[in-house]
Length: 282
Image 1 (cartoon, one colour):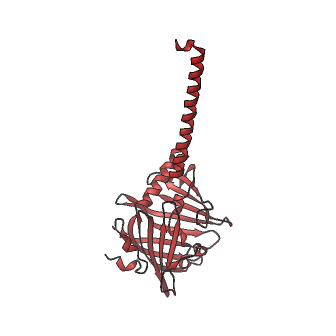
Image 2: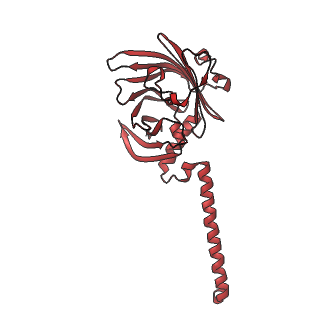
């Protein structure tokens, strides 16, 4: 019997210990490799976190739309100022491109081209009133009010879902909807004015119905409320988004009035020098 030989038993014990050590090292190496590819997958102890993140990212990675509508700033005294809005977006192999054009009464149009990579890195080009050509918008201006509204330049993309630091909080109701609550935290490598973004994501549609963004340094909060959720071509979207900045009277509402969820856009459609509204009739 093999177990009767002390020398052979010691040899087998050493071999087993060596194999166990090798398996542990291999497991650690695999965990490190997974964390480099998908950090949130490697450490997602709660399956709800993976569900919410994967659905939110896939929703953005499938975008291919044109839209038209208006942005209305409602002052605390009831005064309204409306701007026409035209936009289009599509996810390409190098990330999301979004081109939008905003024009209003007595003002020149503002044209923006935003690009977001799969890591959530954002760049913004703009043709602002008084400019004849596009230029890179300095990061210092990303939090400026967009045409005087409660939306900032940075608010035009949902880059928070692509940050590395994600946490699922206890589920809550928002209105009548049962929601996952996702807290996305930025780090020093993320180009953003926000310290964190908390999203209430509807269980049924996996689309956000309420978002609160907290500004770095000041702790000031901005609230976004999504109305009129609808499904077109298998994709969920909101027909209206309201933005409210804490401490500022009034709010701003973005209303989508028309467009297409399957626009079959190409890279040539995102030439900022041509703008957005010229091709909406195509």
